[in-house]
Image (cartoon, rainbow, N blue to C red; front, side, top):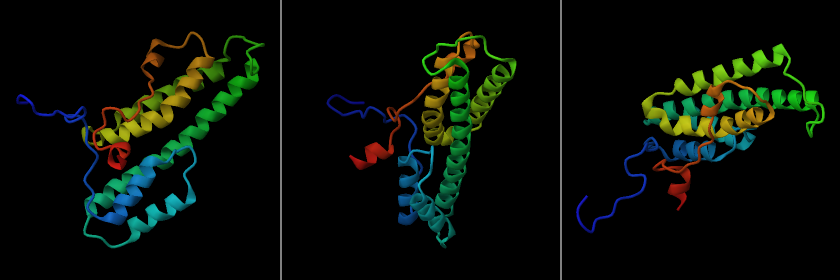
Length: 177
């Protein structure tokens, strides 16, 4: 850094992967920009089409395949979290009029969900920071919704966060600007 030079806010933070093939890049951007609760059919079609075409960008295809697997896993896990939230709402009432201690079965299920969530986030390598942040954003909201409905959870639940794209250099939002 010299005098009068500019330093971009997220210059030394994780960068998005470099994808050379334009069709794979567009599929990547579409997948990263969409909500993974329920993946749109047209996006899945474009992603599978980009993966099936012959391209010299094998690294880009591998990145896209990894993101697709993560998106499908998040979609399935989101369904489980929403089902648990609905079960909690049913047991205590939507406005909390029937609050009672959690049944052991539900308590164990919450602990299992938390363990799988943290294990999944820890499975991402250092070069997959962009993907970890996307998964953390998608699942973190639902985990926090569960956390808000329960008292006396383990202190580890305090580590559940919802990250935005701030600090992610090369994010989809920065690329569109």
